[in-house]
Amino acid sequence: MFSKVCFFDHAMEYQGGKKSMKFLNEMKELIPFDAIEIILIEKKIYKPNNGKAGRPSIPAKTLIGALFLQNWYGLSDPMTEELINDRISFRKFLDIKDEDTIPDETTICKFRNALIKEELLESIFCEVRKVMENKKLILNEGTLIDATLVHCSEPKKKKDDQGNVISNEAYDKEATYTSKRGHKHHGHKMHIATDTNGIIKDVVATTASSHDSTQFDKLTKNESKAIFADSGYMSKERKRDLRSKGIFGGIVERRVRGQSKLREKQSRNNKRFAKIRSLVELPFAFIKHHMNFKVARYLGIFKNQQHFYLLAACYNLRRVPNMIKVNG
Image 1: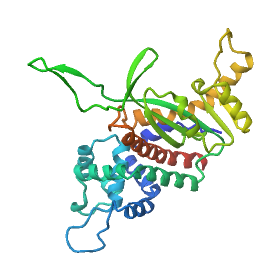
Image 2 (image 1 turned 45 degrees about the horizontal axis):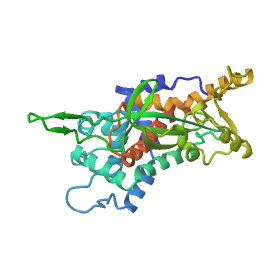
Image 3 (image 1 turned 180 degrees about the vertical axis):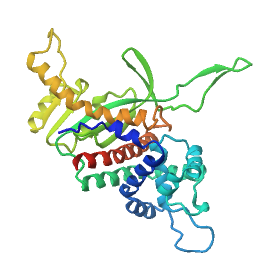
């Protein structure tokens, strides 16, 4: 059921030169630019120039593509502008033929903020998902769910020269603390649902202190076959509920009070479920390490939720060439 080709090896082929050009050419054919542009025009985020006199407006395709580049390569706004000016592969990907249509960092920032405000990054994620559904790349064999911590800067207090207490204002006031493996963490959580091939079907942002299981129903609402998750999602009530709906519950079990060790059948099932469930960790690993998403880049749940949608869309698109290659 699962590919033996290492996705990480495939992805790292595209880090520069001809291979980077090949990757971006593949992405250029996959991104539903026209569908996204229609949404932007309908929401009055983008207004085409339509041949009018004066300085040409930056094409929607260029602005949309710049956001994908920024997230694939983990770039800041200034670095995105610099590399668009510097890299031929970036310019070809964005169809830039006129120096006047190169977006500067302020334009990129304003465009992204407008999309966040109108919740259109979710729309982009949905359009990318449609592309994958049309290519039959999203499997309908079950849903895998998991969550990962996303770190934020902590509130800090210090004293000025006069002894007055001052704090850093640029911290996320909606972020919370949680403890994992004995270590304290401050920030949010990214919860995802994937298919059994690790393609992201949905993503939810919460505070770090929110238990993983609180998003179970939301992430699995459209699943009717099977659900795979770690032991943090297990409860007797949930197990009974899944059974009553005819849904296979591939949730790793843990010892209950008074049970010295798991029964042989439980241990056997846990190994089987864990092997399948492990694929849900692939998106987290790739987004954090290869897309350089180390810490939250925005303040507040709302903005981070929108950013998570864009990260998920970028990740899914990067999976497509390898999946087509494997499926032949």
